[in-house]
Image (cartoon, rainbow, N blue to C red):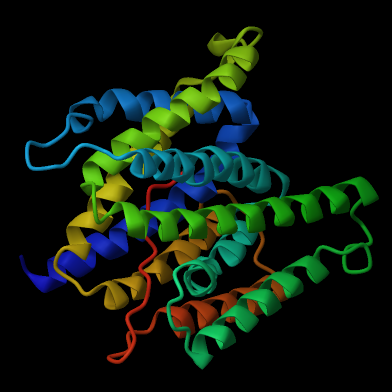
Length: 311
């Protein structure tokens, strides 16, 4: 495969992730969060039924592997979806782009804590950039910075930031656990299995909300956007990432995570009409600096790649 084609797959994968993170804002305005997440897992599950079958050359799953698959889904699918969707609903696509840019740094720290992988000084600098960017974003949402915004709205933004930080931690845990799973299961089967668990975990909440929801009140364009969200989060972004990763070293592939915050911010400003103020630009610059520091390839250290499911 042409290396530049592999680069394109990696870049498009992360751009898709950033796009559906941003476009979840209008979706949560039309569909309750629990219902949206449940339907997304359902659509993804139907589309990936043929990925569930165990390949002939794959060993049966051990008890520890089954536990890791469940934990991967609980953190990376179930909790991530709840934190991300509620967080975007309370803040916006631009804020999500800034905060989600801290994923590579969070993965590096978790790899140090749980996998005992070496972390370079520049990675800790990336963590500092991520913290500074999120802090600046939060200060821009304070009552003193936004006197025209009500106290309730300000508190909602702070809660949204905390939920998005929770989504970052869930995604980082997903990447670290996925590193262990990838040694015993294929990427397609991992994706299908954790999607099934996500659907099972979300079903009680989804059914509870669906009882009184008027599906006919949702416009056709919103359903079309939902189908894009479900397929991009469950299938396309994962397939593109794994396809590119087969032909590009993991530490080099990590550079393309920069497309996530860029895509989320561009969609937020260009499509959703969100405002990009000076504080957002400064926070975004710090966030991108953190991504560059955390993911720039180094010949002496093997980095943990941020593997994607999404959603």
